[in-house]
Length: 275
Length: 267
Image (cartoon, rainbow over all chains, first blue to last red; front, side, top):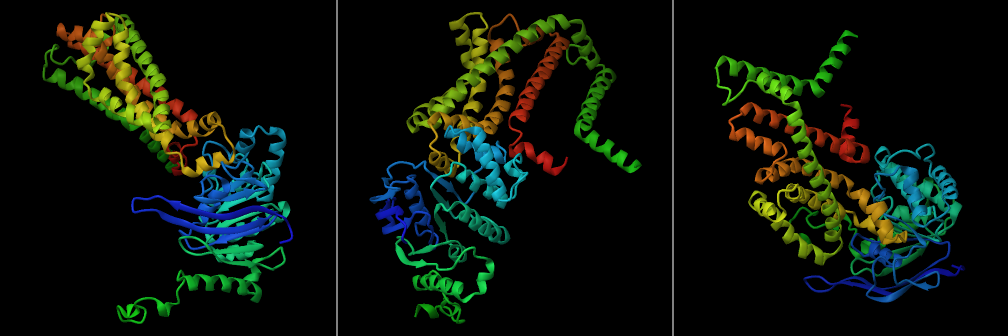
């Protein structure tokens, strides 16, 4: 990357105390994310990728090392970010528009201008006309779109996303991934995207960081050299397949993915795998 | 067309009609049985006798009902004024939870009827002991339910609000409080019914006013018709108060799941 880095993660580790002794969630992590880069963090569940995201957001203290955001050391919850979780975390008592505007209210932003901007964002995610709908009147995919708008209304330089499409059905997921690419191309924000979905990561990212199982460390960093806008037609292409295969191979070598022949009992005889 | 009309009539009956039919049936049974079996008036007066008594003693019952209503409302509002801040304190500090919770449970398990006479001694023949008993009986569900509401805010919601840089007050005003409202109302609905009980218990221990006093008076004189009159007025009052809380709930938390089922089921 030729751009200057926006997120610098330097020797970050995380250890949780527990009754059975300390549990190491993150081994030493070192990498940086360039300004305007779309970076995905892929790893098996429990590898600490969400933990790393929370450390970057300042929501969780690291055990050692440090994170620098836009030149400033992260020591407390960061408010110059937009954040999207796996669940939309909408306020049931507010309609779509007001759910987006909470961000503006809390920050004492100009409400008239924020409203106009929210309108533009809703249009961008295809939710025109749903301003006055309560969350329960929206589908899961629509709710998540509202959450994305809320994360963008204050125009933060950095977007942190923790498996944002993880709870959606496959069709909504495909569509939202496509739409989100469009949003990203319009806004060009730095995105730190956590997922366990390889296809999604390759599709959206400039770079994909593959993580090892607990304690989480970096296994490989893959630069995705495919021009945008990308479409799902890429799924059958050799180039796309190449990146996906490399990441799948990483999971195979970690033992997270196994070929059926290696699966215990698959040969028909119990205990065969153990011998 | 005809079929639809009938269905409409049946579903309409289902909403308010059936309970009404049941009540009227029970009332008729009461009237008929008392007359047919010649049950003495001091044992069980006929419903018509009770209703006529309510009519003839309307002013007497009204004055005492007004006093009891005053006690109920004062106690209930005080219970909110005490209960909600207490819930806030308990849910905000672990230390407070440990310190206050046992006291809370103690205040609830000690029989109110047993300590009511003490209040009467300490506070004299004023309305204060009555209000205090009402407060003591009704604040518990408010505290418990509000604490549950304040504590069940999802962690992601807390993380979200931190990322927005909310102040403590914003967090409370815009997120915690609205989130806890459905829980608070669940507590208020229990509390308002308990407040009615509290007011009567308070009056029984020592009062010269109120429906509780009327009940004692009627029992002492074997004036069963008057006792029933007081009970009916008290019940209607309790139902009315519950209804008001229920309406407030509907207005304030129309967004909540519990209020929504009706809409989606189309009943």
